[in-house]
Length: 72
Image 1 (cartoon, rainbow, N blue to C red):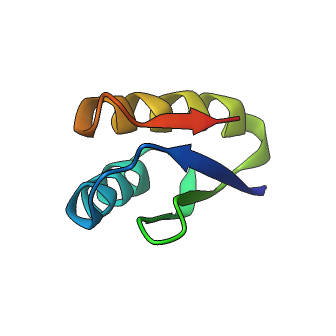
Image 2: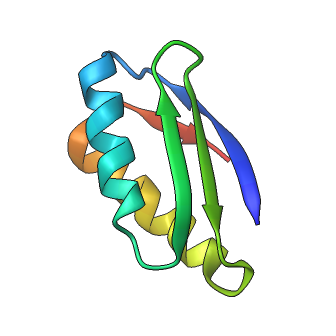
């Protein structure tokens, strides 16, 4: 499954790169991208673990930039 999410209050491109790297390391993720310019995140993961992957991705984002909100 592949899904895009809108991000709110993503403040820098370096943070976006850190988030992307962390999300790509989550088990079940086949691809991920975080774009500072468009304020969007794309996650591609196995269907059976997708919801769990999204929760872990949100946790990764909060660790890098606590003010950033994922609009689900």
